Image (cartoon, rainbow, N blue to C red; front, side, top):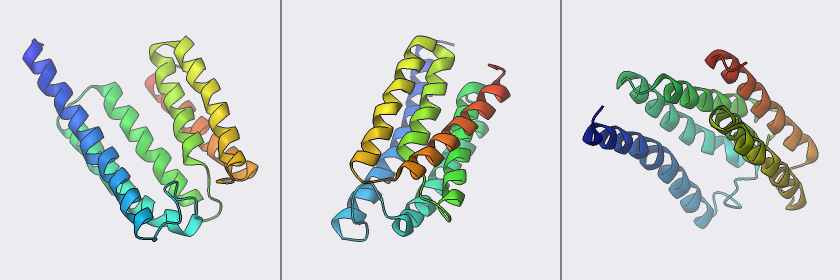
Length: 167
C-alpha cells in the first residue's frame, strides 16, 4: 500500500470513528445537558441514559457496517464490532442496573491496547482502577454498578480476545 492510500484509509477510519461516533455523541450529551434533559454530562441517571443508548448504538452500528463493507482490517472491524456488542449489552443491562460505561469501556480499551503492547495495556487497566474509584467517589455510581460495568468489560474483552485468537 502506498503513502497516499494509507493516508486516505486512515482519514476514512478517523472520520468514521471520530466524526460519526465520538463528535455526535459528545454534541448530543452537551445539548441534552444544557437543555436540562440530562441532569449531568455523565448521563448518570438510569432513565436518562436510555436515550443515550438509543442515539449511540445506531451510530456505532452504521460505522461498524461501513468498516466491514469497505474491507477495513479484520482487527479494526472486529474491535469496533465488539465495542458495539459492549454497548448493546450495557443497554440491556441498563434495564436492571446502571452499569458504569466508563469502567467497561476502559477495561475493553485496555484489552485492545494489551494486544499491541502488554505493558501499556496493564497501565491502562490499572488506570481503570482509578476511574472505578472516581465513579463511586463522585456519586455517579454505586460499587455494584462499577462491578457490573467491570464484569461487562471483562466478559466482552475475553470473548473478543478469544475470537481474535489472542487467548
